[in-house]
Structure formats: C-alpha cells, structure tokens
Image 1 (cartoon, rainbow, N blue to C red):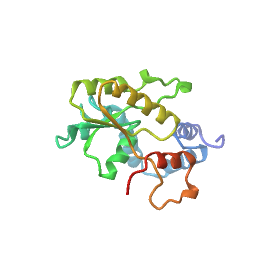
Image 2 (tube, rainbow, N blue to C red; image 1 turned 180 degrees about the vertical axis):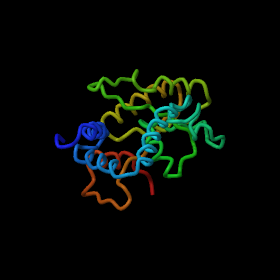
Image 3 (tube, rainbow, N blue to C red; image 1 turned 120 degrees about the horizontal axis):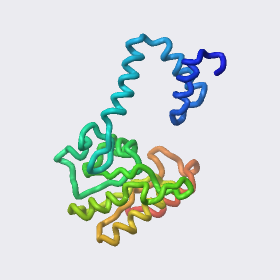
Length: 199
C-alpha cells in the first residue's frame, strides 16, 4: 500500500473496514473509483451520505426504514397476529424474497454472545415482549440463525414468551433442496431429525 499516493491509501484503508473486504479487494475498489467519471464518484458519495442521513429503525419492528415505519409495517395487508423474529435486517430481506410469508417481523439486531458482551439488554427482546403484551399476537416464529448464539437467543425468547402464553415456533432447519446428506454438517442433520414430519 506504500506505493500509492496518500489519498488513495486513505481510500483503501476505508474500503478495508468493510466486512469481507481485504486489502487487495480494497485496492481494486479504490482503483475503480479512480477510473470512473467525477459525476459517478460524486453520485456514489452522495448515495452513501443519503443512506446515513435518511435511514433509521422502524418504530414497530426495528427493520431499516426511510420513515417512521418500514415497508412491511406500513402494509395493511400484513397479518399482525404473526411475528417472525430475525437477528438482522438482511435475514428479513431473505425471508421476504422467498415470498411465502405475509406476517410481520421483529428485528433483534444481533444474537446472544456473552463473550462479545452481547446480552439480552443489547438486543430488542424487551421491545418484542412489549409488542406481544400490547397487541393480540397469536404466534411468534423464531427465525434466528442455526448457530450457538442463534440457538441461545431462540431458547431465551421461547422461554420468555411461553410465560406469557403465546404460541412460539422455530423455523424448520434442514438439508437444502438438491443437497446431499454426506456433505451436510452434524448440527443441520441433528435438526433435520428433530424437526421431522409425517409423510
């Protein structure tokens, strides 16, 4: 990186802060910026600032939103009696893309990880409990990731909600369509057996 002029070094350093972007990829991105027109570079900078200025958390589900409510919470056709709990907004987007869900969501913004200093207080669990207490919720689907933090979070949420007599379900976890059992990890196989159904 020392061969680059100082402004390019600074740009590479900033790109390197992005998740999954190493120094080589950051250098390629910086070189790309050098080759685009000044107008394209300005538009990129303005778009980044626009996102930082205009995007906030939805007041109901804590998804990313431009206004008070996200697109899902603003949709009157959604089933408010069904809440799907996810860790991050990108998980919500993945579920929405599947097209099979018409309920509402609740975004925790993380999962329990005591070693990283993330306990229940750092997540939006209290807000979920408040929603369930305030509105007639029939079912909460816990769709946290199938890893240790996600499973611990799912367990805590199900325990807290069962105290409130709310039906709590967990998304089914299993082998992807077209996948082979011999290449599937042990945790997924264990969940496949645990969540088996009749045929």
